Image (cartoon, rainbow, N blue to C red; front, side, top):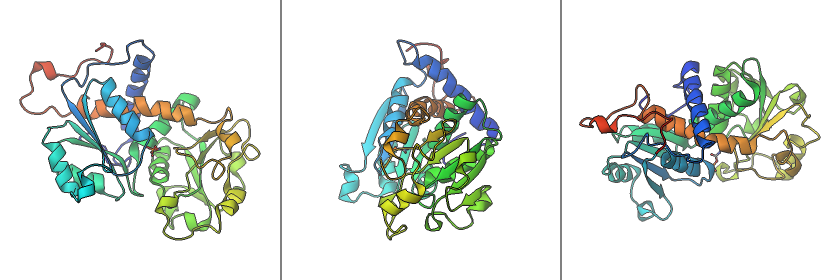
Length: 319
Ligand code: CP
């Protein structure tokens, strides 16, 4: 695997290999010294053109836990503000000879374009409404830890599916792992033809009680140029997941950040069924596994001219 641009590119076996690797990093994370020397001497660039708390912090910490040198750039406050193009920004940061560039950008296909402009491995940390593959991997990891397997598990993805790269990546990943997926929301927020990706569609929460997992999505107001629902109050009345709608044997997930009181009630967020904090914790070990697979895995790219000292170090060895 040279890049991670989409979940579409990964087979079930490749997903499972990344999750197994993440399990071994979770074991490292339980030690006093949580750092391994695997990427010592290699550089990871983290480049975010959109806001992020979870993805940016966990990729940054993942790179540090693997002992990489990290260059973290937020577009706001950088030379992007002075009009520097994406291509020139990538050329500039590629001059440091990074092993990987992790990029989030508002345009679908941006990560794919970047992969054509740099020798580094590129990780798509979210490109517009297209894909968010590392989110899908951490969500599958979280469910696999809870349920053992996703085979036959009924998952409802509820909310603003139209604007959600998470919905798209997760639908593909959940299907690939054998789950049965239903997407649910008002007709204005469900993309036409989404059934072709292999899911049922529901325009109401009737039937959600059959699901083992309810995956709520954020209302992405920043991507809405028009009014898709009459009001957030009306949306919440029909689609908010609260403890009345959630039964005690169901698991609740959300990629974050949550609009408290819109797609989820405060009580549901804080309920024992909520896996939201587990998802965040999973983000760290899964993103360590992604960087490992790209840069030090069996098919990892070893830049020409590197000597013996740059060979991957086994995970178990402390830094
Ligand atoms: N889930 C997710 O991508 O969160 P951030 O926007 O905080 O990275």
